[in-house]
Amino acid sequence: MIEHLRAMARNNAWSNHRLLNACARLSPAEYAAERTSFFPSIRATLNHILMVDGYYIDSLEDLREAAVERAYAFVPHEDFAALDAAQRASDRRLLAFCDGLTDDRLAIPVVMKRRGREAPVERVEDVLTHLFVHQIHHRGQAHAMLSGTSVKPPQLDEFFMRDELALRRDELRALGLPER
Image (cartoon, rainbow, N blue to C red; front, side, top):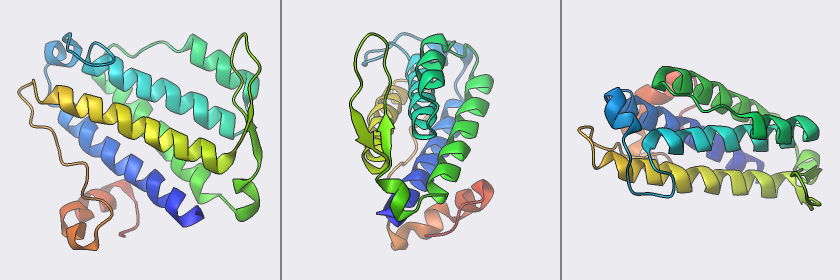
């Protein structure tokens, strides 16, 4: 399970790298344009991913009060460059957390504190699994919205297969991630 979660954290960083590189080629108007999706723009979707990443990582690091307060205080990044830098920092933080996992840490109770309600106790491995699903879900929405822009959406499914290593090798090296 630990190696799988580490691989998912690497996949997350790599997928975000590809998606963010594509979004960097959008004009500010295309980036902020209203679109049909769960969130009304690529910018809003990417900000949501970043905010939720912070909430979950804070919760995993046992910053319970800070997690919920930071989530409610989150100010969306209006310009792409600021969001890009913040998301890459968040990805590095998640990688470091997953690289520090041990069998004992997987079962540590995590309280996902929320305002105005009792939070159930979760386990680290379940919180991480949920976080990765959340990221994939919303990254897919941003990816689909890219189809309506001047920028071709990048392939985000070339990470796990050995046969596709050549398609990601340079990016993995640029990110400082091991080749799988």
